Image 1 (cartoon, helix red, strand yellow):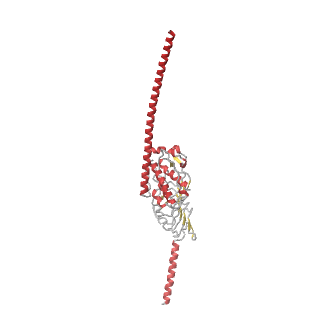
Image 2 (cartoon, helix red, strand yellow):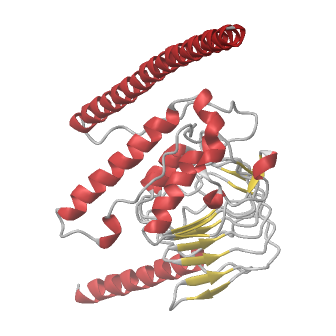
Image 3 (tube, helix red, strand yellow):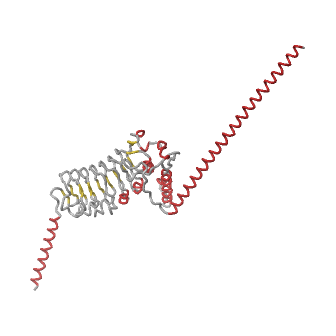
Length: 383
């Protein structure tokens, strides 16, 4: 009996070993790649791959696939490696990415899709990922970013958007990125019209707080071509006021955010960077609020943007009241100035008329006196 139990135990050990062997074989390193079991790094760079390698080890934490010929990412393309932290897909030929391509990668921290041929990104792409700190989308053909994408980028510290086809960028998307430290925007065909004042205001605050950004060089309109948006004076946006009042609300929203930020930081012993900055608001400046994530030139110039929901109802009501009071005061001042101007002009006109009349009377009296003197001299001469 004991011998039978011993043989049964031996068979169990052999079976477990066989299963472990099969499991290790099923997740062996792909022949196209080199793997390091200690660091859990899989390197598949420059191997001429057209697709994601199969049989990747489930404990892979870094996967390098740059310099290949991958053209698209299908649904759950990385389901075998749910623990991956770094995923580099730069310098491929990727034109399409499934909305669920990254599904399951809850630990992803760095993602590079640079040097591909992407035209758009689905708002569901990053899905439930909340750990992403580095996203590089530079050197693609992106026309814009969906606003809903920002919810997955709250912890982002670096965002690369240079060398794309962005003409505008939604300010509300950028305001979600509260942990952003660096941003690249150069070599995009920025259209510096009313729609881009929101980006200009955001950049001023971002740089003031220590953020790093390269440049936003205008390509349109012609009078602003080759000029950095940060150096464009607000007076050049004068025409915006004739077609839109959005700039007023943009400044109120901007100042309200600064006020809330100061209140929050003061409650936490205040940080120097929380001090309010002075945002110039020249008479006649305008604002269009940013296009829907930087869309193309085919969008209307004054397309309304999706506004941020107020922090709470009290602040929203306070903002409306302040706006009404300011507008009322400005209207009364303009009315008073107009009445004063008209009254002053009427008084000056009356004064000029009376002055002219007095001069004419004085001249007439002088002529009468001259005639009287001449008559008196003539009479004396005769006498």
